[in-house]
Image (cartoon, rainbow, N blue to C red):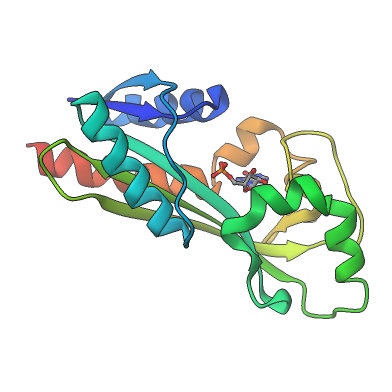
Length: 185
Ligand code: IMP
C-alpha cells in the first residue's frame, strides 16, 4: 500500500508519515506543484489531485487547508494563504476588534486520485475561537490567534506534537487513511 503526497511542505510530510505508519500505509513525497483553481477547499483538492495523478501516473494525495471565521462570513477560507500574507494576524484582529462572536474553525481537505479514477476528498475540522492578541511562537500563520475549543492556550502556545494530536490535518489524514486501508483490502 503506497501513496504519494504532493506538497512543498516538509512539515506536512512528517505529520502524514506519523499517521500513515499506524495504518501500515507507505508514504512517498513529491514536490511536483499543481495548479490551484479558484474555488473552495474541495474544488482545489479535487483538481490538484487529478492533475498530479495524471502527470505522475501514480495514486496521489494533496491537501488544502484554511481558517474559517464565522463573524466574517467564513472568510478567509480558501483565501487564507493570501490573507495571511497581506492582512496578517494583526489585520484580522483589527477587523474583529468589536466582534463578540469569536467562533472559527480550521478545515483541511485531502484530495486522493489515481490516474484511472475520479478524485475523492476527506475533510478534517478543528473548532475554536479567535483570541484578542497573538500568543505563542510555535506553529505558523494563524496559530497564535487560534484557540482550540476547550483550551486556554492558542495553537501558537502548544507544541507541534500537542497540536498534531488533534489538528484539522490530523483528522483529514486519518479519515483518508482509514478509508484507504479498507478500500485497498
Ligand atoms: P495550505 O493549504 O496548507 O497551503 O494552507 C493555506 C493557508 O491556510 C496557509 O497558508 C495558512 O495561512 C493557513 N493554514 C492552514 N493550516 C494552518 C495551520 O495549521 N495553522 C495556521 N494556519 C494554517
